[in-house]
Image (tube, rainbow, N blue to C red; front, top):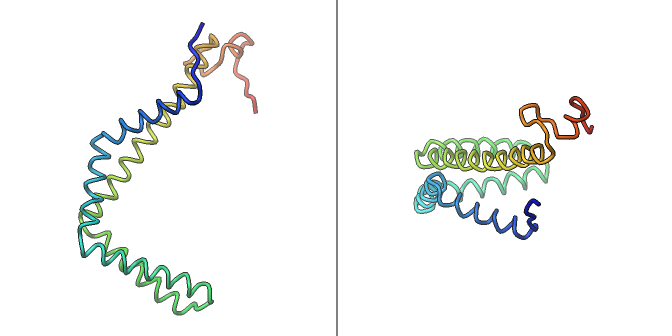
Length: 144
């Protein structure tokens, strides 16, 4: 008989997996880059300015001040570009992509592995992606 797990046990394993992920080079680089950004006065000032402009933009939009909104949006784009030109910001954004890719890879692996295991457990054909019931019935059929 196959082993059974509770949702609580699965969540505990997921937390263990999360700890493993936070101990990867990708996450370590992300944390270092984020810390360097927080320690950089120039970047902090630009981010503060950006946040202030974004609040103004929301207010101008709310009150229908289209001309003022357009001017603020142009300033926002300029400051965002200045921030994006800073090497540590570029590295930080790249590290965000890499961490997200890792998380997506883990999610896809779990999903595909669950599907494959269900197929195996039902006596199906993993290569064809058919469960045992589909194999016994004689071909692919969809639930939808």
